Length: 303
Image 1: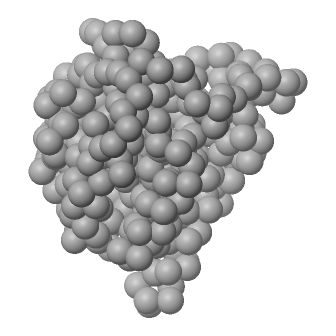
Image 2 (image 1 turned 180 degrees about the vertical axis):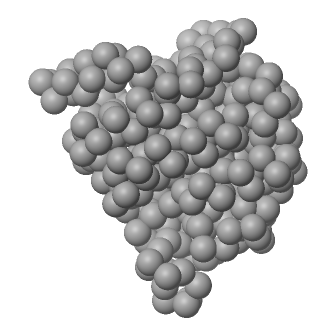
């Protein structure tokens, strides 16, 4: 199903055409982020859901700069040398969360292999700064692989995020071409360690479709994720950010995404969002609520 009918180089189908975000509320939020010297992955990664998320009380902040030390071939975020993180950034993010009145904040980062702890302490500082200003706001962290360092992961978990997210992105076979510098087993191990070290914190991941994966490979990856008790999943269509990035091998129809969502739920994921425009932070609060409800029913989370 996924391997067939490749559409390399073809015009986007109608279901992938969407108007760019606009309007006074969108511009207000953009202005606030600019004035506070903040980056969002919404803008840097060209996310198609910016306005919907902003309007729904969710935003995704990208900390530790705008340049990534890795150069994944699917990603629109810039690659290059990165200076030291801004020590004021955790407080600035917390202030923006307060000014925007966010119920749910997502904090991600560029990958910082140049930092001794991969930026773990910066994630922890940002979580604590938000908690101090907005104790009721849920905080999801979307973290890099931290070089597989469990102590760095513990630093983040100790700060008490509401959700620990790390994206697998694709199936094992495609890692060398899609995620050079990353390892499938290392990323899977990070999710397993997060679940083991902090069983009360939901663990989440995301996978892109349309990079050349087969359905058998995708389902095997989903079973791997359930084997480590990852309980929240997003699946979306990969879109080529520029001619320099990997081409799309196939545009997956919306109906097929629905079938895949049903299969993922049948495997035991608590919350699944799958669709052409789904990204890591899409409807993040709703997926969190589903995971918490499922855990409460299982008697493992005290909400």
